[in-house]
Length: 273
Image 1: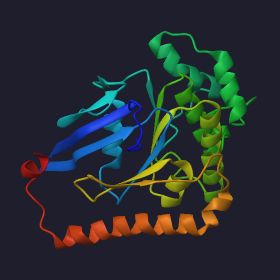
Image 2 (image 1 turned 45 degrees about the vertical axis):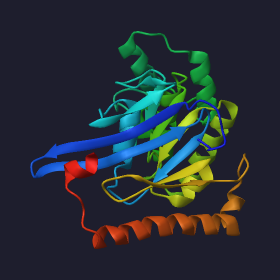
Image 3 (image 1 turned 90 degrees about the horizontal axis):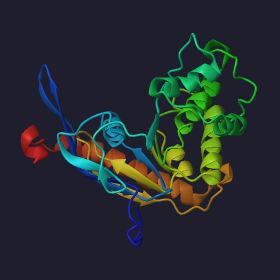
Image 4 (image 1 turned 180 degrees about the vertical axis):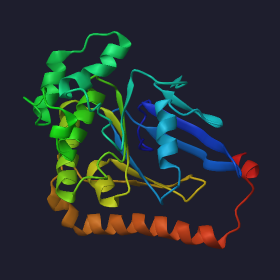
């Protein structure tokens, strides 16, 4: 959320800390992370491998409890799965014995609610899967399966969409296509989005702000605003402004990793206070 904005945050993370108990002792994954995300904002989170990005995202979803701190949605604590929050995972996780339509309907069957077929059909048309409802996952390409996962996540009309490296396994062309598709859907129906990615370029193209996390224990090291207007063309990725921003974020990440190996780490419970 921009410092100058007085809009109430849609999603607010305050002092999020997570300690995992392992066979070799306690592991501090994220430490006192705080972040505000405005309504309709797209925020990407980047950082070195193992810095706790996914732990933070899953905490936002309510799927992982925190050791300390809190996550607020519209000012109310997120204590578990919330119908206003939906997730797209690294894998599409489609049931292989169900066709596309049945996979999208499955969460509604579990909840005992009726799917909005008009909205779902609109989404399928937007992502280019109209007419594929009878196809099984094995008959779909990787990009098509991720499109289906995106439709399933948006079928509930969530106000917050969390995305955990959803396009990392796709080839670069398909990944760019998916980035443009998400932006198109967002322009048609603005939704608050938080995206985890290892690609700084993807983060810049997709986001209003890029959050850089430090090496484990993950903390918010810096936040970079992305000033480019929407809709965005891939042409901006060849500009000096994007080049400079990419390098600044890379220096932040690399510099933090260097300091990690040169500075003694504090004991887990001291760091968590």
